[in-house]
Image (cartoon, rainbow, N blue to C red; front, side, top):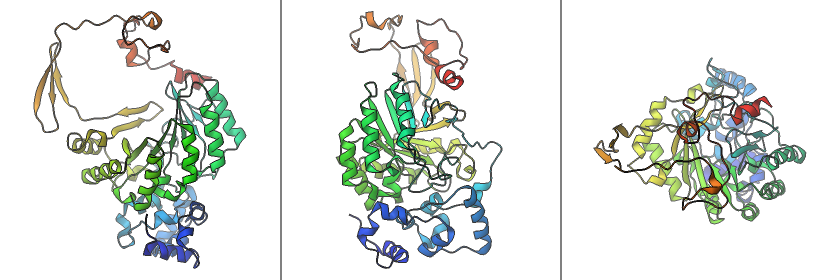
Amino acid sequence: MEIFNGTQQAIANKINKTSTISNWRDWKWQLKNSISNIDQFEKLTGITFSADEKSQLKKTLEKFPLSITPYYASLISTENYQNDPVFKQSFANVHELHVLDTDLADPLSEDKDSPEEGITHRYPDRVLFHVSNVCAMYCRHCTRKRKVGDIDFIPSKEQLQKGIEYIKNTPQVRDVLLSGGDPLMLPDSKIDWLLSELTAIPHVEVVRIGTRMPVVLPYRITDELVQILKKYQPLWINTHFNHPREMTASAKEAVRKLADGGFPVGNQTVLLANVNDCPRIMKKLVHKLVQNRVRPYYLYQCDLSEGLSHFRTPVGKGIEIMESLIGHTSGFSIPTYVIDAPGGGGKIPVMPNYIISWSTHKVVLRNYEGVITTYKEPDHYENKFCDRDCENCNLELNMEESDEMQSLGIEKLLADSNDSISLIPENNERHNRRDD
């Protein structure tokens, strides 16, 4: 358990001289006392800005508001705040107003792929359900700057019910990701109701929650919340650690509660210039994650959202980091490096090249050390013709509940049951939903 350290005590006293460790560890107290302006930030942290800096920063906050929990602010190294990864992720930067021609308000076209308010249906079998626009902290690198932090808005039950009805009426949806904002900003009672509604839908097999609470407000992971979540297995939790310094004693306690509750916990990291764009930092981060039973899931290339250009790295930096992980640490410690394609194309994995060449009979490969080797292809492999008649399939792996499926994308070109010889990505289900 994390002690009430000197920095935390000092910040708490500046908020209220009667503050105690019980106040500090109360997530509602933290939210009530969140830092939302420059003067408040200066008072609580002791960091001061010049008049010119404050003038420029205020212009940034007029477009992209500020919200930092006292807990997360207490992690800032005030002696070297300009280079501090916690400061850079949480406090405004004048570069956020530098909007490039290539920047987009909605870079992932989530609004276009929204058949119902709050629902993004991009992939065939899963949907993103926006259940809150409110976060405990407004991350400066947020891809949804157009929504999160602009308006403090939590949908009503009636609005959420529309999303639930869409999922009920769309039987191909087997996986629902609750996102926002942060779903855990909802009160326990509404989380309980929402999960009960979703898990009662017969074709919903998995529910996921995407939250940054273990990082920016770990006290939100209460015993009471965990008991509610445990009623709705299988439930997967994805969180968002970007730097090893964020894995504090309180954060460890939060993810311990989730892991002990029986939830698979994953982590999605965003590659951020001058924050974590270093092989040593990233390796330390993934090691701290797996040490605390959190599986590195994705490493995201920073999106083309407005005001994020100062955070973006070349894709080559991400490849360099992946080269430093693959073969150099445990396989389960290695995230998948992805670019979330502008325009709504979804996550595209980007990896170093390990296949050097291949022929009919051999594949030439290289390993992480640079060793070049060959893999002999089988001489007598007979491809089984597939006519997609799954019900009459005689393979030993025939599955009783297999559903008829239509091939899509590259799978379509490979399918024996399809005569297509080229692919034009149009008129697929996702584009048809946009037109409806």
